[in-house]
Length: 435
Image (tube, rainbow, N blue to C red; front, side, top):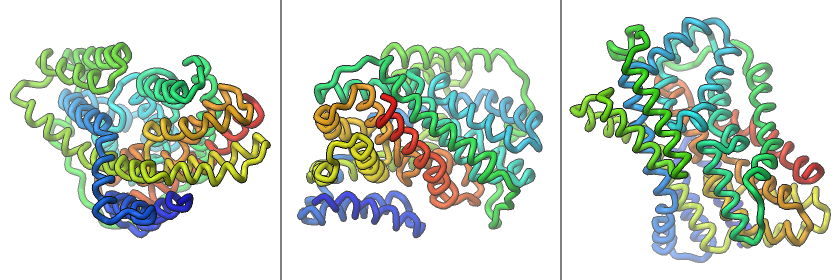
């Protein structure tokens, strides 16, 4: 039973590397896990579908965030940002990538649109990337950095949601810890992502790269081709963005925050009421594929959890642990990596890992901060390099707008190498010897 998770994740990984669509890869992997656990094909499908509701809240929030991002883009404020980026950063490859990483970081903590900004911001820049011979893999790592590092370390916006998820999960398993302690415990693992980003930008992908393939033209509307100036619409848009952030923080609910921002865009007449249908439809088109991948990934996670495969994997690993904290940490991080690669969600993996890891950590004498650092690191591992993760699907949605960027080889593999390895090492050191 312990091998079920490993085999099913390998199936998903191999299929993804073979360029099978990620949704099909996850479904096949989920059914493989069910069959290996002794279920019939019908029961495996039923269990898979039953689990898809586990990410329904996330999927709905993505749709609303997509619509919010479309509404923001309608005002021309995104175009204003793009034009200024082109004017200021043309020819400055490393600085361009770092600025994109900074913008992506804001999408997690200040402007709560998550990955919804990528299909709007990045496609207009693709031609410039090609002219500069900028390696798009560097941009992919920058975007993934911005989508993960801030919420790992900073308890604001999505970071508050992630840290709250950890707190609730460990407390349900009998461990008490404060939000401040969680934030401190995640600083060192998160620093691993900073290290990985710098390696990618200044070493691995610093050389010129010409993108192969004919691709397709990214067509811009007449409004997008114009150079806008800051106006009242833009000011009201910023007010809507700030309101969305404040409501999200107060209610601790991403859906309510996104809905607030979207409604204010219409109330302020920044976006005409006659455009409501178009905004919602465009938001669904832009984010629908990613939202559905998250639902499917939740189904996979449900199968491996309900069949007892995850528990069996941890129990089998526990037999090898001994009483050496460094060895225990190393093995549990490997287990977390395998689980998160399959599920594709650090948020969704936290409750699973906490229920399994907390008893082991308490028995081994880990401090509360070391336990939280272990769980947070294990949950983050794999998310950056999973084919089913929003942290990889988001960058691909923008960088592949012209058909010249491959999800697995240009996003998943680079982010796995540059983020999972340093997160693993930094997290292992933090848990074993610092906390």
